Image (cartoon, rainbow, N blue to C red; front, side, top):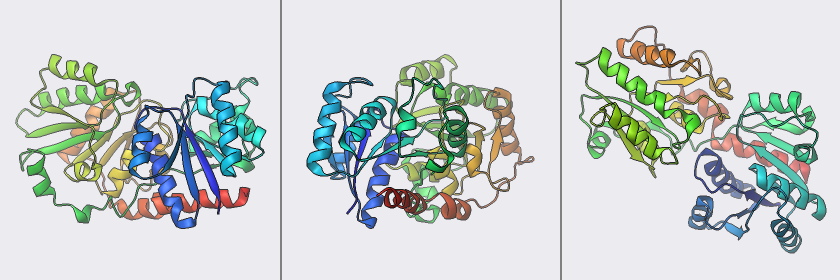
Length: 360
C-alpha cells in the first residue's frame, strides 16, 4: 500500500482545498492510504473529519516553523509515509524539508497561476521529486521561470465527479422554485469564493449595465460562494440599487443544483486561477459559459465550447453577455463529453496514481 501525507496551510475553502479532498477520496480505489496535516481551525480539517480522513493538526506558523517541521518528521517516521504532497507556500517549505530529513519522496502540487519568485533563494520547488500543476500555463511558467526539469513536472487539472455534475439528474423547473426564482427569468450566475481576484465587482457592474440596456427583459444575477469580500460586495450591490436583481447566495453545499438553474455561467477572474474548477463543472453541466482568458482556462477550450474574453476588459464581459441575450455570434455546443473524457475526476485520479506509483 502506498501511504501519502498531504499538507495544507490554508484555512479557507475553495477549489484548492476541494481538490485535495476529492483527490484523496479518488485514491481509495487504487489502494492508496492518504492523510492530511493541516491547521486546527481550517475548513479542510472540518471537511476531512466528515469524510473520515485521518488528520494531524499542526501550527504551520511560517516557512521555517521548526515545531511543525519536527512534528512532521516524527509523523512520517512513525506512520511510515512514503510520499509527502504539499499544496500551499508555507507548508511546502516545512513539508519539503521534512521529506528530505525523513528520506521520503516530495511532491509539490501548485494550484495557482500567479508567478513564483525566480530567485535562487526560493529553492524549495527545485527540491521536489515531482511537481503537479493544475494547468498547462503554470507548468510552462515553472519550467521557464523557476528552472524546473521538464521531466519531473506535469499538468493535471482538477477533475470534478462527472457522475455528480450530470445535468440529466436535475429538474431545472423544480429547482427554480426551490431557489425562489420566476420560471420565465433568465438566470446568469457565477460560482466562486468571494476573493478579490475573482472580480465579482465586474460581475456586478456587468449586471448593472445589462439591466440598463435591457430594461424589459426578466433577468436575475446570482453569486454563489462565501469569503472575505462578502461585506464589500454587499455594499456595492446596495450602492448600485441592485438588491432586487443581484443575490449573494453564500456557500452552497450542492453546486450542481445551482449550476443546473443557470442559463449562462460567468467566470470573471483576472488572476490566480489554474484550470478553474467552477468552469469545468459548468461545462460538465452543459451550461453556456463565458470566461476570462486567465491562468490555464484555455486548457478547457475546444472548438468554441465556451466564449473566452480579455481578462482586463469590462466591456468584453458586458458585450459577451449582451451577445448571449441577443443570440448574436454566441456559439455554443455540447460540452459535457469533451470535459468528461479529458478532465473528469477519474482521469485526474489515474494520472496522480501513475505519478505515485512511478516515484515509489
